[in-house]
Structures are given as structure tokens and as C-alpha cells.
Amino acid sequence: LAQEIAAERPVAVAKVVEGPWAGCAVVAGPGGIPYIDPRLQAAPEGLAEGMAELAAGLLVREESGCHRLRLPAGSVRVYVESHLPPPVLLVVGAGHVGREVARAGALAGFQVWVVDDRREYAHPAHFPTAYRVICGPLPEELAALSPGERHHVVLVTRGHAQDAACLAALAGAPVPYVGMIGSRKRVGAVFDALRAGGVDEEWLGRVRAPIGLDIGARTPGEIAIAVVAEVIATRRGGTGKPLSALDRPLIHLSRR
Image (cartoon, rainbow, N blue to C red; front, side, top):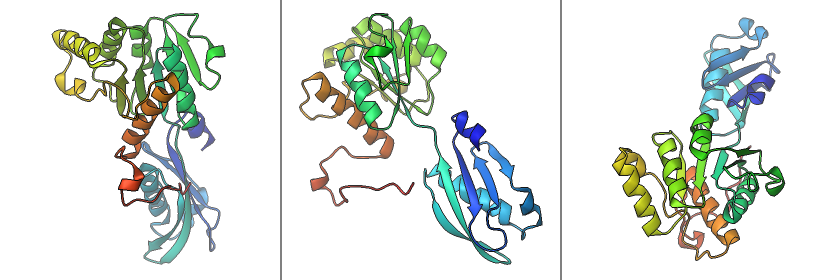
């Protein structure tokens, strides 16, 4: 379990909490079952398999909790604890907006990575809440990072040339979110350049640009809140509408 967590791989541990098999555990992840307690070899038929299936199902839903597992020989209570690597907020651009986005992202529970090609900007001292601060050519660094399903990409670079280069490097990446700051004119110019370069239209349609929710943001801090709010809404399936206009509780408490 410790190895899976240290490697930042999603994993869940299911443990029997009652009866003669109390304390026996199974560790399961998307890639299979890395560990089964040896004592479960003598357990009732289906117990280890049922624990692994329950753990894998709760892991997909990002949930933990106690459940009753029904078997041919009876039932047993099993507690499942899911361990998920934190989502990554990849902030491309370390200027004044990028700093505030990084700060807001860390507050929201993201593991923040910052990339900029200017050493005077990409300095850890400017980003005390960031997990990684990387300095180097933007397209090359993005390609090296190989963003995937954990990564939510926010482009807040200093110009449309940098935006276009970054989006070209990201094209086709299986990221759940990518957004770009800028006016509609700037966004249109960047998209036209990418289309001319052969970037897939469907992928471009997934780019949130201009970035953020409409909250009337003006200052860098306000813009950061609008941006991170949109990332959260995308990740959690929110509407971005006022809760007062929806039939929904104010706060959703995690079971974990």
C-alpha cells in the first residue's frame, strides 16, 4: 500500500472489520490486485474476490466507507479506504495571474505545478504553495511532462505566440481540462493558427477560452478564483450556477 501511495497511483484497501477474518486486507487498484492477505486463502469462497471488487468500485467513485459484503456462506462487514493522488493544476505562466492561480489551486486541494521560461519568474520563492516549479522552454517542458488524466492545464502566458506553442504541444493530450486566458480576439487568432497547423478541431473545441467563470473578475486574485472555480466545476460536474437557484444542498461533505 505504501509503495502504491508513494508512486502516486490510485489504490484502495479493503479490510474485514468483524468476525473471524477481521483485520484481513486486500489492496486493489486500476491495474489489478497488488496484495491479498495470505490468511484469506482459507477464507470462505468469494471473500477475497468480493473485497477486491468492492475496493475497485469505490476507488473509481473516489469514495471510502463501510459496506456489508454478501457471500454464499453469509455476509461480512468490510471497510474500504480509497487513496487517490491529488489532482494536478498545471499552471503555464508565472506572471501575476499565474501566481494567484497557483495560490488558489493549492487552497482547493490541487497539487500545483508551475512552468515558465523566464528564470526570474519561475522561482520557488514566488510559489510557496507549489509542488513543482519548472523553468524551461514551454512546449518542450509540456511535452516532457506528458500531461494526462490527473492534469488540469491553465495557460496564463504572456502572449498569444506562447499560447499557440503550448496548445500545439498539448494537442490530443487526455487532460480533463485545459483553459487559456485572453480576449476573444486573442483566442481567435491562436485557434486560427492552430487550425492552419493541423490541430484537431474536436480537441480545440474542448479548450476553455476565454478561461474562467463569469463572476465579473478584474483583479489577478479575482481572475484566479474564476479560473479555479471553472476547473472545480469541470472536475466535479458542477453547473457554475448559483446554489440559490438550484435544488441542491450548500455543502457536499466528503465521506473520506
